[in-house]
Structures are given as structure tokens and as C-alpha cells.
Image (tube, rainbow, N blue to C red; front, side):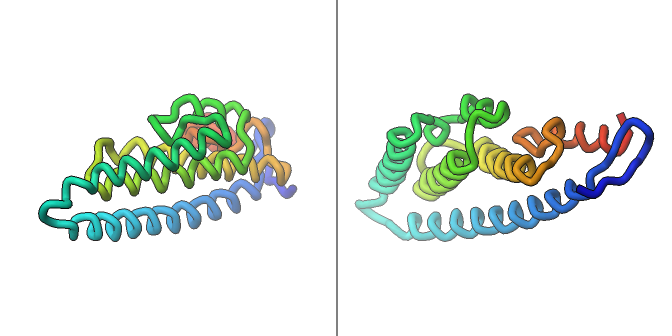
Length: 172
């Protein structure tokens, strides 16, 4: 792996810039897909008027329940059906593999769209943080598989990545 000496104590690995570029492009695509799907399904749900409009939050809740139960039954993880702090912590400590992180990310993605578009309960801010954190987790695991610095892996906490980047550049 090619590296550049920035000072005598720290080395900056050029591969880290490549992972940052890949993460940015994938996150941009994922956010475009998320907003597009969210708005399209919300418009479809709002088109249901009259005596059947009360059914929409129930259908959204049913969809969320099916997604969450399917993921829980197959993985034992509850991150889709709540805030997901336990799964975020497990991913941060390297206890989850790439496949499981992707399953949780896709499940939360679909559950959030179902909830919001059907005018069900719940917000949109925390789920998007979960989705982004899981995307960062996958990127970090891929970086480790490619031989990246395990101390400064792009894991779940963006602030941790910034701290490691600052250390790499000798700013801390």
C-alpha cells in the first residue's frame, strides 16, 4: 500500500482517499434513491382519499412489522424496529459482518420509507443516521479487507474517522 510521510510519526495512506471517494459516491447515490423512493411512495399513499385513507398508516405499520420480523427471525437483530443503538454499537466494535450490516441498512431503508410515506409514527432523521452509519460500516470493513489501517478504519462514527484522518495528517 502506497503511503506518504507527512511527518516522522504519522503516515498517510493514499488508499484512504480512494475509500473516501467511493463512500461519497455511494452515499450520494443512496441518498438520491432514498429521497426519490420516499417522495414517490408518499405521493401514492396520499392519492388514497376518502373512506380508505385511514388504512394507509396501518398498511405502513404492517410493512414495517413484516420487514422487522423477517430480519429479526433470520439475524436476531432488532435495529430495524427501533433506533438501533445496540446494532450500531455491535457494528462499531466489529461484531457484525458485511452481509448483516447490508441487511440492516436495507431493512431500515425500506422500513423508513414505509413509515414516512404512509404517514405513520416515527421520524426520518435518526433512521437516516442509522442507514449512513451502516454504509460507513460496510466501507470500513471493506477497507480492512483490503489491508487498511485497523486503527483508523472508516467505521460507523464519522467523527472517529475525522479524528483518525487528522491524526494521519498530523493535525492532532
